[in-house]
Length: 277
Length: 124
Image (cartoon, chains in turn purple, brown):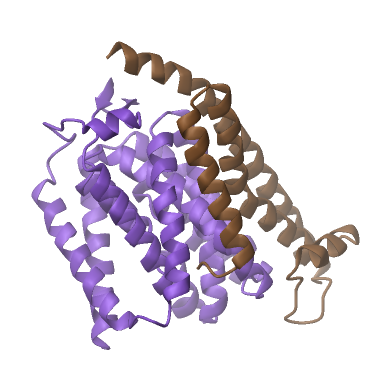
């Protein structure tokens, strides 16, 4: 019993580190590890992964919000799109074949993986001019980059596209139950052209809010098993705290280079699911 | 540029408040879960029949009062689940204090949608 809990704890520390670093919930690590390695029923693995998302988000936000890497206004503004999207998704579930959704969004992720690959050596976005709406919503911001040792001021563009993509991210997470963190980072990076660190930190802030909305349902349904979710929560909190320390001292290009293979992996997995392989 | 600097100074105070609220919530939940796990391993009993555990807030509180290990762990998880909700709530208050009414509305909208999806219980 103690051995199993220790294994879960270790896996969760790793998940927490990667989640905090990349702005994801850690579900892509926690779910396969629990089901394949420990033979945990998928129902409890998903319940534990919801806990993992919240633990990553809250654990990482302590540092990212304090260090001003998280852009609170962008996070809150986009959260409207994600939460309404998630509600829409839950309502239209069953009306749309998830098969095609997996293919469409798998391709979209694959496309963004290639786009990211093209700008893999770009430390900070260049030549971004703020849209009038971005100024009106006061979305522009700045943070102190520990690696570059200077205050980074950034502009924001693609607000409409970013907002639309966030809505879609919400819909598919409501429909497919997959982590929307990856879509959030993608939308902020690709459309809104935010610095990579701001994208992952803001995504991290947002995923917890979205997950909290559904966590209650999982709890009442009995999907959150304390002997699994307990060690997951502890491990992820430890991992996320370590992850934030690693992220702030890492170059944006390095974070992006870790993100691209994860993006490619998830997109291929989605495509395979859509094709029924 | 000057305007942006001013705006950043205003939000700075708020970031510290939100960060501290989060830190307290996260630390509290981790501590409760740890106590629950230690008690579970020490007593070799979950306090519940095999493969069962409390799945409602009332059942969790009842179990917590009688110090059942599983109920203690679930209490910690519940505190953790509530931290993002709390975070949004605190943001509304701080945006209000900063007199940033546009974001008071935006954040309140998020809060309402959150509560709505909690009640509807359909969002996954």
